[in-house]
Amino acid sequence: MHRGRGRGVLVVIALVTALVGAGIFPALTKAKTRVEANVFLPNVGYSIASLSSLETTLGVRFTAAMWYQDWSSSFDPTPANNLHASGHLPELTWEPQMSGNGIAYDDVIAGHYDAYLTNFAQGVAGLGYPIRVSLAPEMNTDWTPWGMGLHGNNPTNFKAFWQHVVGKFREAGASNVVWVWSPNVTPSNANQLYGGNLGNLYPGDSFVDLMGLDGYNWGSSQSWSVWQSFSQVFQSSYQQLLGVSSKNIILMEVASAEAGGSKAAWITDMFSQLQSGYSRIQGFTWFNINKETDWRINSSPGAQAAFTAGFNGTATSSGSGSASSGASAAGMNNSAAKQTFATAKPSNPTAAPTPTANAATAPDPSTAPSPADQKYPVSGVLPTKLAGNLVSAATVKQLSSPEVGVIFATILAGLLAIAFLASRRYRSLHASPLLPLGLAVERVERWFGIGHIDSVLHRRHFAKRRWLKARYFRE
Image (cartoon, rainbow, N blue to C red):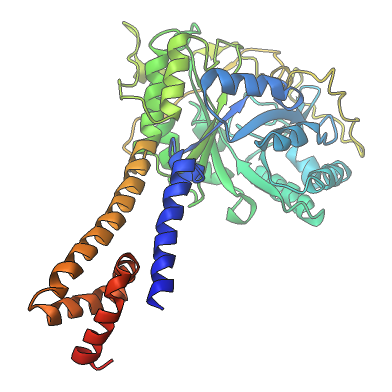
């Protein structure tokens, strides 16, 4: 029995050594950052090559990738299937608008879109694997075509709208959807739009899987904007979400401009903040496109290097990227400036699109429009996306890859040291007047398996120890 159990212990040690050395524990040894990193790329679902190319350039592996779709088209499984096949979680931002016109929540609640919703839900259910759906993002603003105050949309019917849509999916058996409720960081007119409390727009824990936030550091890229740190963009709204639900949070849209400060330092600070604070944020999706300004991760060598280092856990904190001379981040919170934003209100905000029983056919992948172009077509000047106030956050420590390696090495070295010391101890104790003590030690260590190691390493003492045990312990 001693030999068999002892060999088993040695086999376990050998396996652990081999597995760690071969990298069979990638999820542990490659623990880069506490949060998952995701990305939006134009046409990503139809061009996985672009995603692979970006990952190769950055030296990172994204968890999920996002694309946009409005209510003009039926569900096209192509983007989801392509992303899933490439090992990425599909992330759909689903916008309740048609031809740039927002949809009235009351019409959805009344069932006018039920045929469309059922058809869409059945397509999603047919995927057979998880998919995240961010429905009606930035609903707490008036710059989205489905926002507050348009088409009679308000906090009360928004919640009923959300519950109705989720209900249709459940009826269709689409249990593979992770529903993301994602407001924008608090706008300047929040009190007028929804009473200033995001809880007034929350559909309830039974209908939401993840809370989200959209927020950007515009820097000085626009005439109305100033540089803001990661915390100045997100902290106030994040703190408010903590009081809305215990659900985890994901940043569904985040990016920084280059102008007005150091984008590289901003990215470094973002990873640092997400590592040491914001414990409820489980991930982020970077809005990787050159649009209103160059939001891309690789908009500059410095920004690219900072992202790679932050992802790999090798960055050193270099601050949040100070504002340019004369710029005031606090002034951003009270600014009444307007922006010409590529996400605009519908040209006729009083007229919601006519409900249709059947949606249009799915787009041809070869001619599919850019998701960025689908997003809120430009038709006017809109209010600024504003950030909240700076507040404190809890801290959390995450092991880096080197730290995990050190732990593995320490455990292995400890096991080998125990085996060696046990061997030396038994040699000395068994050859001295301290035989009773030696056997007592062996009895204790036997409970922990250490004696089994010794019995294998020193088989020649087997008979002698058994005779001595019988004498002193009457075994």
